[in-house]
Image (cartoon, rainbow, N blue to C red; front, side, top):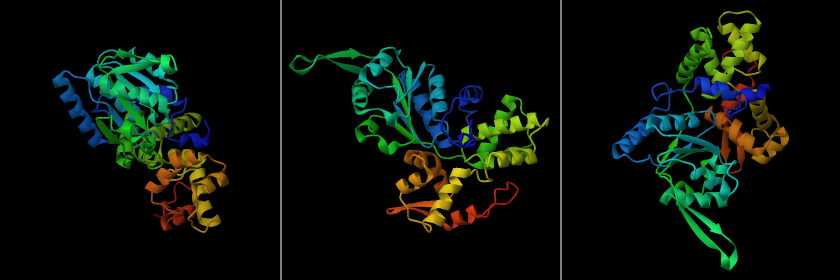
Length: 339
């Protein structure tokens, strides 16, 4: 795993076993997102009283905040099966048909990265969501016939990091839509404390706060950094993760006290120095850094904007005074932030 992978909230292969081990089993164990949890709990209880499947749910927000975990919890609370897929896996109408016809009454189908569905697949899902019916076209031209297949009453829970890419007709078919927000530092510390206990890691409260401050307000990243601190402690024969050990680990990974890594700082320096603070277009930034535009927009930009380091304008991105002050800070985890 590269240094940059550690602070990318997207899923990577190394996350699979970790996610399974640390995934909350109840809503009480799920830290943060209180508003969303309360709304989902009411939705579940109401559906159970009516003995009906829960309505289709759309969950959006940055990667790594717990969208998949919420789908697992909803299915568990409803006492139904859960089928997992993604927008990239559903390439044609037949893929949708094979999955939907295999569901049982009340089951939950979770579609991750739903914004990646192609138009044909999306239109195939419309009647399935509304009327629990699958329309299959057989033949071509004048000989074409439509075959209708009745489906069990199921629930789609869709997750996306880019809700703006979903069409209005598709969004309107979800009875519930919730946005996940970035976590507070205190919430990340709670998550790290729980993760440390589950993984059998000894860590001081101050060390957990240090890791939480550099986790980009994202649980997935926090758990990755905790694992790297554990590795550092084991290699150096330390029985407990101390503040110094956490700081040394983060310094080795080139992650500063606010969670910014090398690419984040390059973006800030580029706008500030090469383009005199901006505005500068996203295409220009991507070309200068040899990064994909979508990676910058999905991975780096949201957190930099949350910190107030950059702003979007009609003419492009600009760096704020706060952002300028931060890039002047040396990469020393013991040095206080200037904001």
